[in-house]
Picture (cartoon, rainbow, N blue to C red):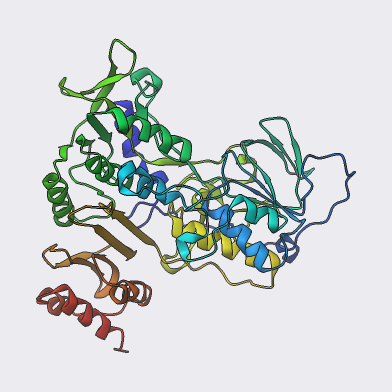
Length: 490
């Protein structure tokens, strides 16, 4: 197995759904124990005014993604941001809705691509657009382009890359993930090889798209599917290479994957499934020129996009306690780490998934938003109920101007048990996962607002359902009505 394929196979660092979520069932009560009640209160401290680089020290958030933006909004809603909250980010921008980077941001320039400030948090959930000016108005101190490189939990201080010393009373770690990379020795750092996690990555990718003719995308998951759809809009020769036998193997059934693959092929996308990669090859100018496969063949490429998963950005916070099974920083149902006064939220947090009685780490914008809000509410109020998350995933592609067909699917629940597929993908199709007679998960393509609203209700209630009746449904609409009726059966 070549190193890159090993990285692709290690997607268990993120939320794996093929046999349920990546999970770890603790053998002790260490994760769910109640910490002292004082740990959910902000901590007081006395310091000399000139000792530290940050003026706002009561609460510090490390990270500049979705979770940080939604946490900031929650602090504001509780009247605890002005003069109290500091956000430290490695990025040059105020927190933004990161999913846009592999969707609307990659549209060709003549097809109305998304651009900042258009997708700052919290517009993704219908909230206010929190521009840099918003943070100033709310009295929130922002430190940009200065990642945290060290922590002293005894002194409650952070050190940044530029040498700043920051003080915190309560700390929220919202560092997210970093893209998994190909090793340099097989060409992972050649010019023309792209990874995508932030605006700078996306801008670099767009620069290559403007000049390229042949793009190769490595990875058949979310990133691969969304970047391939964008490349189609640029009218590029596009190939997707991955070691699995189907697209999005951790969620899609083989039948469902085949439907999407056929759609992509209609757009001219080529698939190399079950393929291993030996290395990337550079041309005379040093830029990537080809992908060499394990069988010795090569695929020409002007640019290569690597989408093989991500790793939780735990450094330098390993000291607060990691989960070595699902990865990330171990927290309880209120997002408290093992160190009082320190919390972790979003992609980097390994938390108890209450409804399935296991621990998981979820890389998704919905969880980033909800976990941040739950954490801050617990920190600032008397809220003590455990986070009760319902797994949710979605994708929206081919939504650019002039596209003959837009794709938008949503999934809620757990993909375990047997499946029933209803619909012809014209454009609707639905897949139901049934385990021990109960509906565990459901995926719907091209639903309307009312139909999409039904999905989380079904997945959370897990009603008993007549599989045979569902199989006889003549349409997606009929199948959803059968599922809806099952909610009323006691």
